[in-house]
Amino acid sequence: MTTAPARTAAAVWRPVLLAAALLACLLGAVAPAGAATAEATLWVTVTARTQPGDTVLISGNTAQLGNWNPAAAVPLQTTAQTYPTWKGYFQIIQGTTAQYKFLIRSSTGAVTWESIPNRSVTDGPGTVSPIDERWNVSDGAPVTAVFHATATTVYGQNLYVAGALAELGDWDPAKAVPLTTGGSSYPVWTAGLQLPPNTPVEYKYLIKNPDGSVVWENGANRSAVTPATGTFTANDTWR
Image 1 (cartoon, rainbow, N blue to C red):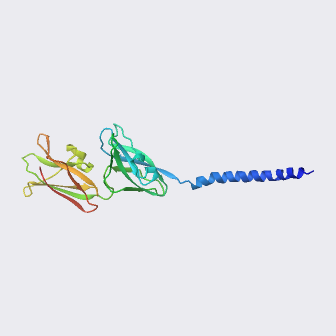
Image 2: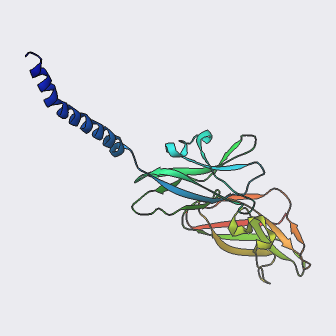
Image 3: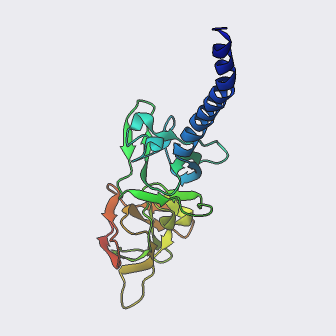
């Protein structure tokens, strides 16, 4: 007679305890999901000319981008068919802004960062546009660039400027920017075009002969940095 009530109490409380345990499990399963931070995938494309064995990576101020640690940066991929375009993706916490830059790691492990200000991307409502950039070229409205070069030529020769930007032909003489001159301005040649702001620029002048041959000026590459706004002006003399 003394054990029957105990069994009855256990029978009564067993469903309650099971329900409580089930509820605890459900809450445990829901809480982490609710607390977990949702992430979005951002696809990245960057045009970067590299040396054999180099790898282009992206790093930034988030854990997903390696917290500016080159060893934890996200590597991008290219192929013989798609080079110099490098592609990849990284995760961003939804509703946040990430700062980032591209870097190049050589086959020996040496790291070269872009020298421009940090880039940024924000994951807002809706679909975020894929990132499509060029190595070491800033975002923002282009600035007007004017090149003045003093160069003595012979009849049939023409002066061009080429450099390390797509706007300057990526060093390809066939895509170089022509300068013009006239009776009142010769031997000063002039060209005007648009260049990205806040961007390091390497360039050189070349002469194209009537037979199509090309003569580059002597010396090291010229270098400058375009302003954030306004006009960039170069006043050079052929060397």
